[in-house]
Image 1 (cartoon, one colour):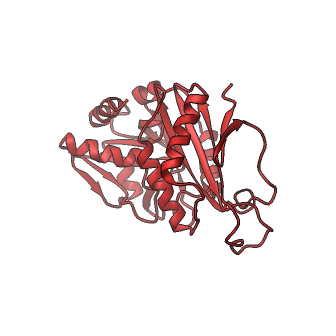
Image 2: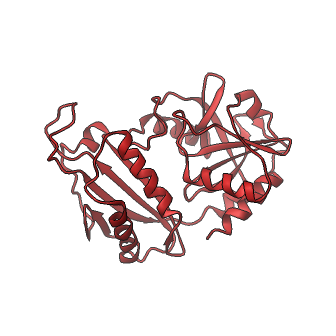
Length: 277
């Protein structure tokens, strides 16, 4: 069992340390990151911590630990748990204080918690593909901030699970945004399309890496909006997320994408992403 966790600046035995008045628990007033671990090493850790720092600034949260110190502690945590394959989950809340909606006093310390979980690579689903469902995007208008407020995502993911699908692809009206816990790409006539990294989506670390890989592969990526109808008529569709990596989507609801098999461009991107670890 992976029984060590990071609590503020200490690696200690894992136990229930959440105060009933922790603002993360009561308001979702905090931020988080999920980092993939491959062969004992966190992948793109700097990029994840850079995004964590940005999220903190966007919600006016002053973290009590520096990014450099967090990086060191997370690497120590992976080592302490002897984690080879899996994830690091970490979150920072605004701290524990009397339950009022406004920010607590400036001397209230933020609370940082992180733990690891063993998790295999998703090679089978990457190679074989999966299905998805469509659902309306009912989230707030700052999806670019990786906050603890995830109930709309939870409801969307549950809808996918109840239909035997891997993901719920979200749309605002006719515009596809992303998925409940991943970004969405489509391929049409040899070019890739993905929603621009604005306030309507989270700019995924895996998403960003895929765009970089496509530049090296001379594949054109269009960061622009597209419709549900365009998605359903795409040649290929795939999703991307931490540890899930790159998964071909073969069917959305009852509509088959392309020929119903993982596309050649998607398979090329899967291969290139695997070369990173």
